[in-house]
Image (cartoon, rainbow, N blue to C red):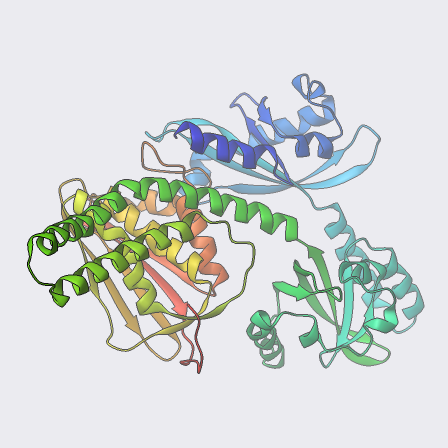
Length: 487
C-alpha cells in the first residue's frame, strides 16, 4: 500500500463511527480507534492494560479467532458473535463483534481486524416489542408510552398512511408536532428514487413473503434528505391491521462509506494518469501535424480544420472524464442512464492505459440502447475498477472482452481477461476488508465495487480458471427507455 493510500484508509479507521481494533494473535490490542474507547468506557492509556471485563472480551475474540483455519475452511470469515459487556459504570452492553483474519500479500496471517457494534438498543427493542405485541389490545396506551421512550424512530402506518410517530421520529424528520405527520402518505416521506423499493416490499407482504429489513432515502419536512435503516413488522393498532417500522439514522455511516469510495476514486484517477497522457498525446500530435500543413499550404483546407476540431473534442472528453472521477459528489440522484453510452465512455478513457500494456479492449455489445436507473459516476467507477483489475492481471499483452447481454428485466455485463486467474480460495476471499492479491492493492476496490452494484439493485459473479483468465459479471435491473434522459 502506498503512503497516500495508507493515510486515507488510516483516516477512515481512526474516524469510523463504530469501534475498530487490530488484535494480536496472543489476544492483546495493537491499535484501536476513539470510538472503541468510548464504547468500552476507557481512555486510550487504560486500554494498554485492559481491565478484567475488557480482558474477558479479548479472550473471547482470541478463542473465536483460534478457529481461524476451520472457520476459513467453512467459508466463515469474518466471524460474528454476541458478547455481554459491563462498562466501568456498571452499565450492561450487548456487543456484536466481527473478527477477520488479516493476511499479507503471501497469505500469511498478520493479526485480527475486529469491529464492535453496540446492539444494546436493538436487543432491548426486540424484547420490548415482542412483549408489547402480546398484550397490545389490552395495553395500547402503555405500548405507546414505551415507543415514546425509545431512542430510535418508530412509525406506525396503515395502508401506507402514517398513524403514529414517536418523539424520535418527529425529531428525525424535523416535525414540530404529531399533527404534522398524521395522515401523510409514506410516498411523501420516502424519496421518489426509492419508490420501487417501497412498492416491492408491499407486494412481498401481500404475497405472503417476509418483508425483512430495508434502507430508505427520506425527505424531511425542512427539505433535508437522510438515509435510514430499519425493519417493519405487522401489528394490530386501534383494532386494525397496521405496520410498525423501527428505523435508525445512518446518514453519517453513509458519509463514511462515501469517503471510502472517494478515496478509492482518487487512487484510480492517479493510476490512470499515464494512460490518459498517452491518450492525449496522440490527438496533440495530429493537431500539431495539421497545423504545420496549414502553415505551409497556400490555401485553406476545411478537412484539416474538421480533423483538428474532432481531436480537440476528444481531448476535452478525456479531461472531463478524469475530472468526474476526482470531483467529490455531494448529491445522490438516480437517473435513467444509457448503459452502452456509459461503457463506450469508460472504454475510451481506459484505452490509453491499455495501449501502454499492449492490451486491447474489445466490446461486444447490443446495437440498441440499454437503459438502467442509477448514478452515472458511480457506475463508471464500477467498470473502471473491473477493467483496471483485468489489466493488472495481464502482464504479457492480450485482449479484454466486454460482453453485454440483456432482456426485459436485467442486463449482464461481463469483463473477461486472459490473465493469471484465481483459485477458489481467492475468489471466496474477494470483498473482505483489506484482502488483496496485489502487492500495491488496498483490498477495498472490489468491496466498494460490490457495494455500488448492490445499491443499484444488482450483484456481481466471478468465474476464474488459474493461468487462463477471470470473468467478472455485473447483473443489474433494466428499465424502459425514458422520454427524457440526462447523462
